[in-house]
Length: 215
Length: 375
Image (cartoon, rainbow over all chains, first blue to last red; front, side, top):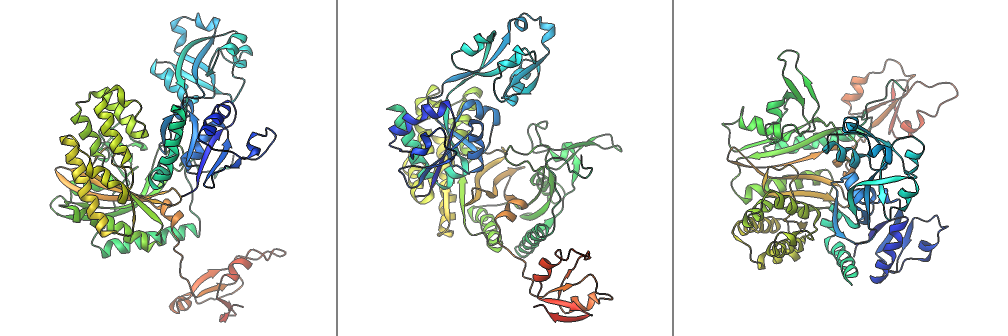
């Protein structure tokens, strides 16, 4: 059996993923659960199955390069990067949220004539540009990596596109969710070449994930 | 900003790597000429109309464009040479059949993939125009294998797919445009969850196809044992016939099958093959296609990918180091004696290190115009 590396994202999805991995009888070494550890590479109770923990935006990149053969990434990230080297093979039904447009109340009341051009704060530049282009609007993106809701408050722009879970953060920052771009869940992604040349090993793990989801 | 900074995705190839790439090209040309694949060198620039004649959507091509001041027509810098070979074969050389051609040259892309930022590559490949049967198909695969062997790349696997199968399945289930796109997405991601909405039978058939992905020896039986509707069956039968013939010739080679791989080029109509290295790198790809009712097969690859995986080394046994201080060196005489000249740099007082490494790498040294063994 060849070694399989699973890339998992840091943060919220990681918490949803652990019960799923437990259902699959995967036991990760203790350091994985230690919030102070600087380790990024973790062993499991399976000799040929190891885990790397990286930023959610980097999971797809690691898998596309073949550094990890499989990974867990939200479809927001897959949509943003559109990697040709990846199969999005399974909906893990975890990490549910949505990618939404939110605006200040003043922006919502703008007339149509003023909407041919829009300034948007977001992490999802490509997704946003394509989405607004379909509506005939030229979106210019201000790339922020966090605290995106602050941008309208501080006068940087009036529109943001970001992940929304409960909507509370938007409300607290006087923003109104106006449009849902994508409904998001985490997907099991697989490197295309690995899927071809290590098919039986990878299919084995994909099937185990599938069984765990349906349990 | 440094004035000599190159645009993103462009680079100079410097010594050692450049030498390795030239060696690979030399091996390629030697093999092609010996195996009857005549070398052609298509033009770097063509008018848009001819350069993109194979592309259905002429707008959607990844090529630099420029305006010809003479004719006032738009021209394109090639981003793929295979269409140029097809043009030559169907125009200038249309009376010569069967036609075996090979080619190499620089290609430029406006944008490469997310992973590969390089916008400049050297493409090489071969095309066999006017093929008849599976023997002819195998000739191309054998040619690729010979080439890889010569490059000392022996740890690879081959994956075979059948891009025309997707259209056959779509025809068998009378899929409309939207359904066809949904099926394509499912096949592209090997994820059948959305197919149920179209048809239960389609999901059953697609599950068989997806389960057949994997090692040939184990999974070909899945295809052989299953029943398929008319159009799909025809394609599957062709696929199995080709694969069995190839496997009978390549008993020890790792062969994987993936019948539902979607063809990104969109013009392949028979088997498609891809050679992968164990480092998850695509080495060479190719396949069968049809131009003006002629069956053809070809392969193509990028020099950079081969260079990364190849272990060829230049066999230079008589390197001679010539210090910069050496005067009136008879270089022609040294070359006649089959020495490989390595020139020293001008030494600056206080920094004698720059020549040390290259000097240590030489077998001989020239001192006062006499060849001495380098200790």
